[in-house]
Length: 269
Image (cartoon, rainbow, N blue to C red):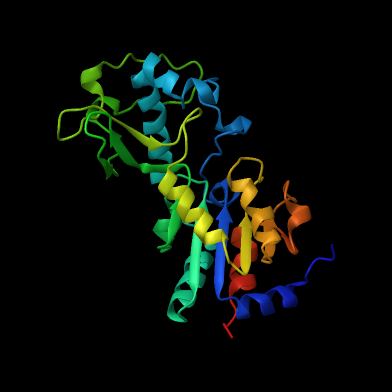
């Protein structure tokens, strides 16, 4: 498939009435958020399933919360980069023009929202939301550390002498129940409401942007061929072609923060 050049893509962008954006860890990596899967994202040599699964929670909820408290502390210091800001500006222009814009993200760090994005579908949840295991209430929580007991904990150093946290150290809901991170863990199903919102965004979009994702994790990876099959122009912005690059109508190599501001800074038709 012959790829669209920059001008051809921008012409499609100007004319688009419904745009859907899919972002992954590459966007946030530019802001200093460690990726979960790469070697630099490991925490004390633990495998991801030792920290982010229902089994891990049953085995040691204090360890799980120590890990997520660490992730929250790191994310708390990170700021949206120019890629996040360019997408927020584009959404504002689409909204003002009476057009539809939806951002589907696999990230949990909240940087899209911090940049000003409003219509965000968080497929994997958010570091800044918690869920009560007793009453099931989901609330926003930006407290770092999550409770005083976790102050000074969370070092990723493999030689760090780990503390043992008791149930009374864990964050609690107003109802008295223990709360957990509102994150989709390994072995858990994605929220039906989020899946419905993502599918609605993909259905009928005339342009899709795929940014900073390896596109190997489903269902997110499956949205690209669906959009393409339904006639959408699909453009990828990435440091390297992803697993769905052959489905893309255009490819712009580079970091989102460097590519997006000028690529998306066009006047709508």
